[in-house]
Length: 246
Ligand SMILES: [Zn+2]
Image (cartoon, helix red, strand yellow):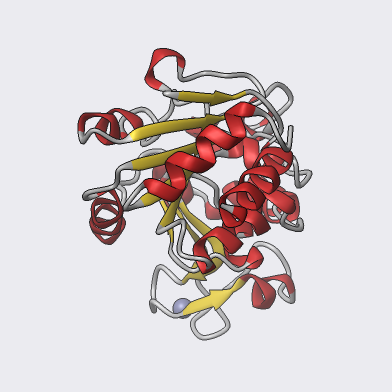
């Protein structure tokens, strides 16, 4: 893999690009042991998204939705893999301007990535719907579930975007900022079926950018200019090494 012509080709594109960004999805976290929520036996096969994954459901019965959220907070208790770290190094070295992730596990930040847009929010923080005070996952873990706001007693809501919720405007703004003038996009661990993955590669391609796909099972088809069908961690480690050796 290390010396494969595709890695060299992708590294050359990255080195020559003015602005490289990445779009990541569940596939980068499965290598950290976090199962794909949408996969077979995934979270959403066991909890009906309409009953457990909407803001409406949360408002109607937060205690019930917290049976799913309790499992979710356990699931994301994982360590970054070598691919996350390789992306962080690429950013530090100036070869990656930022990451748009669909993941809510915070693993890119744990690995050291700084410019990360969490398109679907994050499980790192929880906000009280009544008093607006924000609490960290570490603080939540010390409470009995469902966690009640230590200030006012209301059941806390995770800062994730539920299925029926709008993407916060700040997230749109930050995504737009990253996409503007990007001339290379690394798509990793996402099938491109779910928003925003469904739109972002096309947007960068229309700007004349090069799309590099890293997926165990390639999914972008003709949309990808370079397709690396291998594990995220292995590919990113090889790619980062090749980029910095050039
Ligand atoms: Zn409160």
